[in-house]
Every structure is written in structure tokens, then in C-alpha cells.
Image: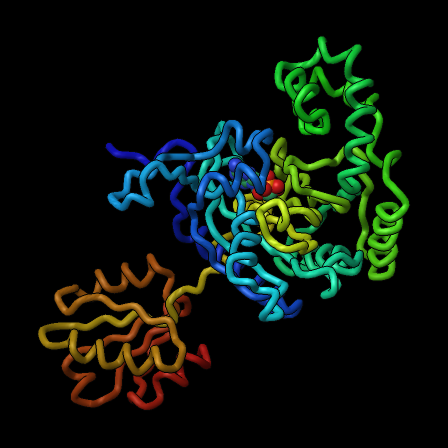
Amino acid sequence: MIKSPRGTRDLLPPDTALWNFVEAAVRDVFRAYNFHEIRTPIFESTELFARGVGEETDIVSKEMFTWEDRGRAASDKGQSLTLRPENTAGIVRAYIEHKLWERGLNKFFSIGPMFRRERPQKGRYRQFYQIDAEVIGPASSGSESPARDAEILEMLATLLDRVGIANWTLELNSVGCPADRARFNDALRRALAPVVGKMCADCQRRAVTNPLRVFDCKVPEDQPIIAKLPTISQFLDEACRAHYEGVKQILNAVQIPYQENPRLVRGLDYYTRTAFEFTHGSLGAQNAILGGGRYDGLSEALGGPAAPGIGFAIGEDRLVLSLMETESAESVIRKPDVYIAPLGAGMNREAARLARELRRHDLVVDLGDESFRLKKSFEAADRMRARYILIVGENEVAADAFALKHLASGEQVTVPRGDLAQRILRNE
Ligand code: AMP
């Protein structure tokens, strides 16, 4: 038997109804904040992620699905391509490629699959879905302002509430600007030198290449050592400190609760200043529902103009998992309002005409086949939890009035064709 590849899964009904419910709710929220959808390719040139995410990150160094293109055209040959592991780099690439600032576009969202070759476990997959949003633009558009950070965070709180995720925690930090990070890195190197020998192999490597990454370490034995390391907050310059204060003041004003976490650094190279994560208790080890932050240097790192930005990626798989605690997929799925049972030769045509009329009234209609015995049609209607069954036999067609039975109460009435839709909509 051929199965889906390791770390991938089929999203099946009724669960897909929850996915649709989430996506519809987030689209509503994005509309209210004037974000517009952007759809970028699911594969990009490998160089984009090497530059935009960072060679030293786990994502780029270990987790990407990368291949050499074997296309016929000379320009394809030897081109290295990668399934996108995240979408900020792709959106910023599109922003630069299409000069989107010239059209005054600066708030984008996208929903789609991402790919990382990780060890699969609950809440961690090799193909997973992210809901991304990014605000990016020239500094003159206000893209650098702490008001943008606060707006993004307030939007996320609204979005989670709207979807029905209670008990989230917003963890907040500022990782400063590159100059702060350089001073912090020096201090970290000094602090790590006497202890790094006792840490995991990854941390030993990070201590040399990019000590900040030590904070990504999840190895339990390393945690007491990490807890004693200096934190970035001690190294922020005046402007970064003021920016961070500005974000917090607005959050306080709009009453969004947050917890400061000075060890939250995030795994990606291009983050500056604000960094955040929303976590949810129900998810166990993989408790981050979403993460994001400011990336003022990314556009330039990708060869674009100066364009400060901030964004986030929600793990949609994890959002749906959290939601499943309180909401069953069955409760959001719309069941058929009516199941039409054509009874006897020639009745499929009549049933099709009726189905077409009823669906025009926004009713959910399903139907069987004229070869079915009535018992079989009743069983089918029950299995799909239809509200009514409508029987279409020769006598009904002749009278242009149909037997409509309410399945829960068993009550049956004969309804003229013209009254059917209203009758079903009234739910009598
Ligand atoms: P990141 O791009 O690593 O900051 O991830 C943002 C969010 O995507 C995380 O908070 C998770 O909710 C989700 N996520 C990241 N990696 C995976 C994965 N392998 N499987 C499922 N969700 C993921």
C-alpha cells in the first residue's frame, strides 16, 4: 500500500471544516486591519533562504528540501531550488521584485504549506501550514514605528480570540539592532567560554558561529547553563530601548497582556528589535502557536531598498489542534438541509431539477439515485445527518407536490414545489 510520505498527512473531512472555519475567521480579521493577500510560489531559489533566513539556522543548515533543477533550458541547469520552509523571505522577495512600495502596498498576508525536514511528532510535520502576515515599507510609510508592532500584536490577540483560542500567552522581547547584537554576542562568547564544553554539540558549534543561537537550544541539561547567561536587554541602545517601551505602552493602552521573556531570540538571522511568540498550554512540547518579529534589515539583505518590516507566522496545524480541544469539527460542518430521494425510472431528472432550485436558495442539498430503494435512501440521509428527506416519485411529479419528511421528528408533509425552499429554510 502506498502511504503519504513521513511527516505529511491528509487533512480529511470533517476536520477540514475546522481549517476552513479558521481561514474564514482570519481573513475577516485581516480585512479589518487592511491586510491584502499575496500568493508566492511554494518553491524558490535556494539562495533566497540562505540569505533571507540565514545559513547558520537549523532551518537552512538541516531542514530544507532542496534539489538541483534538471530543466532543459540552459538557464534552468544547475539552479538550486528549495521548497519554502517559511514565507517571509518569499514575500519580501516579491515586494522587491514588483516594487510594491510604488503601489502603496505595505500590508500582506498569505496562507499555505511550508516544508521542513524535521523529526515528526504531534504538532510537528514536514509539510505544515502557516498563516503569515507582514507589514513592510519605506521608513516614510511609518513601517519602523512601534505602532506597527503593537498593531500586529493587538491584531493577533483579536484573531486568536475570534477563532476561539482562549488562554494564550504573549511572550515579548526586543533583540535590539545589529550593533547591540554584536556587543551582546561578544559578552555571550565570554560567558560561554568556560562552560560550553559541558553543553550539547549544537551549542558548541553555535558558541563559535553565532552564540545568540544558544538560546534556541531545547536540550534539558543545557538549560541551567543558559539561564545564567547575560540577556540582550542589558545591551539595547537608547533608540531600541525607546522603541521597545513604545510597543509596550500601546499594548498597555489597548489592554493586551504580555510576558516579557528576555531569552526569546527566535531562530532567524534577520530579526531586529521586537520578537514575540504566542504559546498555548494544550500543545505540550510544541507549544508555540505562532512566532514573529521585526526584520528591519531583511529587504536590504536580499538586495532591495531599505524597508523596515514586521511580521509573523501562525502554525495553522497547531492552531487547529488547540481549537479541537473546545470545538468539534462536527459542530462547525454544515450538514445537508435536505436529501433528495428519486424513486423509480426517470426520476433522476426530476430530482436534479429540484436540487438545482433548492440550491439557489443557499440550501445544502444531496441526492441519491433512482435505482435506490426507499430504505437505502433513508439510510443514506441518516448517515449524512440530513435534516429532511424529499421523496420524488411519479405521483409527486404528477401532483407537483412532494413528500418532505423531517428526519428527527418523523413528521411528514406534502409540499407544493413552489413552497419547498421556504418550508425547508423555516426548519419546521
Ligand atoms: P517559525 O517560522 O519557525 O517561527 O514558526 C512559526 C510557527 O509555525 C510556529 O510557532 C509553529 O506554530 C509553526 N511551525 C513551525 N514548524 C512547524 C512544523 N514542523 N510543523 C508544524 N508547525 C510548525
